Amino acid sequence: MNSLQNRSTLLDKQYDTGQFSACIVTNIGKEMIAKSQNGQTLTFTRVALGDGLIDDDDDILSFTKVKNERLSANIAKWVDKQNGQFQIQFRVSNQEVEIGFWQREIGIMAKIDGGEEQLYAYATSGNGADFLYDKTTPIDERIVNIDFVIGNAENVQVIVNGSIIYATIEDLENAIDEHNADENAHDNLIKRLFGSAEATLDSIKLKIKEWAKEACLPLSGGTMKGNINANGYNITATKFIGNLQGKADSATNADLAAKATTAENANNSSVANKLGTSTVGSATKPVYINNGVASAVSVDLSTLAPKASPGLTGTPTAPTANVDTNDTQLATCAFVRNAISKYSSKDIDVLKKIMHVGYIHFSTVNINPAELFGFGTWEAMPAGRVLLAQGKVETENYTHNFVAGETGGEFVHQLTVGEMPSHTHTASINTTGNHHHGTIWTDGSYCVWGLYDRNCNHRGMGAGNDWDNALPNTSTDGNHSHTVTINNTGSNNAHNNLQPYISVYIWKRTA
Image (cartoon, rainbow, N blue to C red; front, top):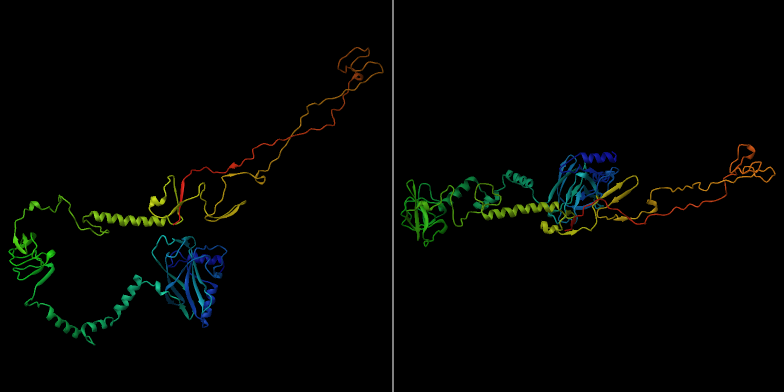
């Protein structure tokens, strides 16, 4: 299988590691399996997490380690699933993460006997990775199960860090099921309770009957001794003898001759003017309990608030419900404040995760985000800088790898000769000053043909009509030179190198 097929296999198969692909056993891992079949011990040591990306030309089978390890996780649990399948569990938290990163790769590390730790299996999430924030933004611990192949490997061991083993709901349910299925699960407890080396059903029943004779009143009746303690319950009676402890607000005889106290003040005979009720037949009447003695009283019901739409005065109070209560009971001031405090804090937690360390904030108002949001340490970005996405750029005439945090660029730029466009300079010379020289033809006399006729009459500057008086010209050529001067122009200044812009305040969260 070539590297492209390996990469396709990784990205297509999804397991319970979320966005991560199936684990591929490396060439080194296969060698480890073979050595374990020959009697050597294969030990899985830990899990390496990294942020490396798989390139098209990467051969995953030849990997000896993850591309860029960022975090090491201990193994918390393992299961031999038989038929050559193996599962390990590890926990991911950011308690030791100084700088957040994208979780793109998982490496299962192992060794043979006491040899060097190497990459046994590898999985990647590619561009579907989750971001692991740094430790300043606490996250819930993630429990990750990952399956991979051990073939018919023998002598397999796992290094488990017991300090990180926490029971999940599934673990508890399995333990409870095993406990309930054990017929002797409570055997020792029963023996200790009933003081018997062999606790049987009959011996337990007999012991309970003996206890009941000492502590319980038979259904058929009997004599009760001492004071009756009915705290939290209503007692209906025709006559009370002795001290009644507990709620005595329902009695068939309103003329309570004995001392009867309320539930809020049990055994307190000094309580005065407590309003209670007494049931006579089917009617319930109000009574006063004064110094422990209940007496009938007439109450003006108009002074009591109706159940429907009561118009309360003063400062009425009510029980404060739990902050997550969602029913029709009254919401007190305390309930409202508690709810605001709880749910606003959740919103702040979400905001902290969104505006993580390294987050960039823009505004046209000069307010430090720490004052605006109430968290984090923020610093103003350098003046006159624009943001540029990191990564490698390749064009026909330009190649550069922009690294996060790198700076560059110019506000103004002066062109070099190499940056000037290719061009030429031309010059032309006109024909101004073109002339000729005439020649003189004579017939031996003093008259010049062309200027005078045969009789020496002046003819002017013409040649006349006869050919022998024509005036020929010499060539206009002459040996001479011209000098052409091309002047320089421009001020040699740098030109503005800024794009159209709007200036804003930029802040970066640093802690």
